[in-house]
Length: 623
Image (cartoon, rainbow, N blue to C red):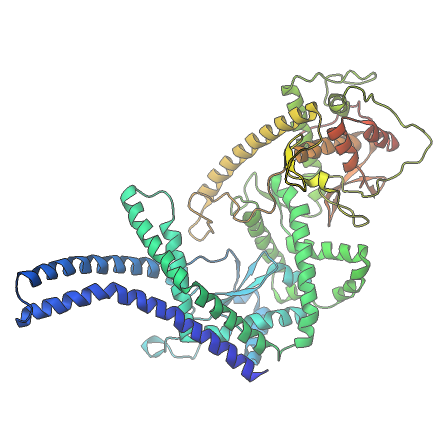
């Protein structure tokens, strides 16, 4: 440990903390200045020095504003002191549920010669930090250690912050790697214990909480005006100490990083690589695997365990990650928990609330799903729900059922009906040009769900992922409006699907909001008043009209493959829902669906269907 570096960082943090406190002192001085002038005038009158009509008028002119300023300052100070600072939604980990984890953290704090964190919590994200929860609104302070001083004789010291650990780290990292990653985080409790830094942080967090309280909606006009004044003062003070607070936190981080260099420095370099890998796997798991389940009202209950499976699959596919599989033989950090399954379930539910929204507890339309049931309950059901919505949109547009020869049920939901409607005049349906020619895959295959991409090739071109709906307008490289490809029929069908899906989401949101309100408890995490069902951190923007149409046509094709060709729905840990044909992934469907949507040409898709024995004229089972 370099004592000079640690002392320099801590000294810089303390100097910036004093600068923050000077802003508070100046604000207090401005508030009491009129009162001081009024006291001088009143004292002069009582001693017989400042008498006369002019001095009487001055006393009234200064005294009344002084009282108003004092009342306003007292009100602002009361709001700043009583406002509840924001805290990150986390899963608390009591010591009895993870004694080994607490023992490791305390041993690490002893080696760093810093106070141990007061508690440990998990967050469904790939990050770790210290969070101050010493405010009275967050609950009573922790009990003193057995044998320690208690009662009035106990000295008042700042409560150590809470250590928040990213839950994917516990499942993917080994115990030594987690220890190395947490070392610089825990080292931050040392500067946090300094009284000046603790006071500066409380002041800044109080101002931030006051701004949030002042901007809360739903108040009457008189109260709204008072809150606006409080918010203006709090923002003014925040602007005055923003730079000092930023530099203070940088000084604290520098001192903590310098202090942590003495603990597992070599292993920490290797562990940082695992941090980046865990982040990539977690992001891929949420966007490709968890998000389709959340949209169906199901939340995977073992997301952290899924990270291990996803990264193991990545190590199998990617030659650069071959060495990572050898790590699986070492002890994972989740062994430090007494019941890792229960903790994983709680973190998975919190991730669903954070990134998608929904009730805080399971209910009839918000149920957990395990990975074994995912293909049946999520993948297959998603395809059939989308296919049913597609046929309802066709019914609303007045599209006639398919009249294909040999159709068992002419009025049933068939893939042929979709193909015939999206086919543009002049592109007649055609079979394979050479029936005995082997089927060739596309050069850049994608997953059957239209979202994922195969590791053997790059993602599709910008034409596939460009924002805007079918036939919508986008900006080209020169900044001019550009019309996206799409036929008139695909534009109308995409618009109908967009409206239908928006109505369904609105109904679901209203139902979930009512369920959340009914199940809300005082200890539940609420993002904002009246917004219990809205996610504060949505994973992805809403799908465009063309993406919606492509997903629905792809779902219809997958339903036909399952019902007529013996295909099965499956889960790919990196690409999410996938279709297995003959035991292999169908990773070349998306380009053919886009050709049908954008050009009205069903030829490539019909060739693909023929190659795998999929019969589009047969009705499929819908939900």
